[in-house]
Image 1 (tube, one colour):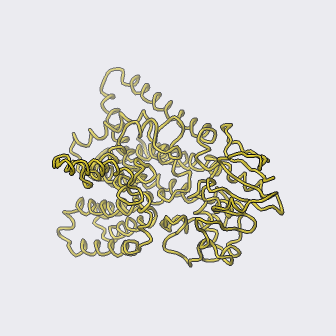
Image 2: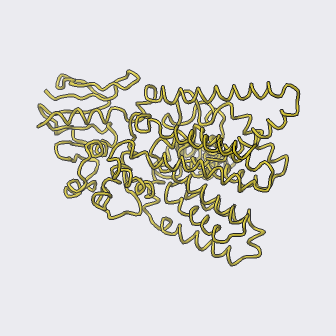
Image 3: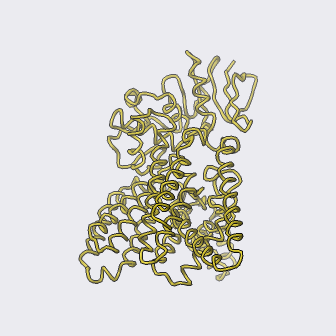
Length: 536
């Protein structure tokens, strides 16, 4: 490949990746979910007052819905909110930006991993292409999820670390350690991935560090120092109480095991009692959760959560499966040592998510990126290299390219044409419309039902409610299971206060003669999502 052609392809791939991440960014999906709204409003509050919605000055964690989000994404959203205002585009801009920058990093990372191989540039360019059009990357680059920034920092840190090893540049190795360590402040799952992968990088460069033990010790000290702040901050562990299957809050799945264990003890059945032991149940659940991330149906067909994939497709192109398998085979057969990094990456990626009750969750395991794409690129290179030596090779290559292209076109059609109509209900569609409608009902008390989930933050966001005024009234410290008000809008358990003339907003109406329907909000799929009622 000539240098000119390489440059043209590089630029085209980059612009393609940027385009599909920014095209209709604030419109598809057509509504923000509560996490995106929370990130946006807290950034707005920090911009305006230097405090979050709870009145904490420049917090090290974003309390939000008591899930204490890592802070990096919120701080990154401050500038977009300053420039573009508080809207869906600004709330999603950091994710789209870092998803786009990751395209460049993927090329650099893959080139550094395989730089001693003659195919390094080719595979790096292919990896860049597959990442640029990856449904997995595109899906999360177009929504304001903090995990996407974590992927960027992990790729950046790994690239700098390996580049430093290749060039014997100690400064770059330290920079790589710094960025990898900082990734833990961007997404909860990075708190598991980053330390384990850091150990893998140390092992990968063990020949270098055996002669420079002082540098290795300093790297461990730096990585430990960076992560010590979140490790000893109890707030950062609050989220685990709501999602880990070992948490007392979500141990319903243990009830059957407990009953069986009691039965075994009653009948002195020691063998079955061992099988029904709580620790074995935990281990079995973890293994099931872990393997579910590699389930072909979840990866290539149905995905997991409706917000994590386009209608009718998974997070990876089905046509990519032969490439990924061929890539893994290529690395193993050729005994390519740098491939150790890829296998380590792909095996560690789902560990954090596997502890959660709702596994697989491809948002929590987003750090899978870009490992699948690199194997895909290696497999593509390998398959086409083999085909180039057989008769009618161009015909076979053409068929493969056509099939893959059709799969890509189908994904983009499903995403941009059907995400809003088929999955709008999963994106809290109707909340914005309900708030805009009720704002016009002056001199009325507005009551939001609890099934308008986290309705208060949507009210603050879409009204661009002045954070100074909100904090003067107590901010979100007033939020509790009981009733609380923001001006004339009421949230929580307030139904007992509703009287004649008041407005009631709900997503699950129980119609009675006491209420009349004044507005029903219909999602793009033609289904009613929010009802606005008035007490008579």
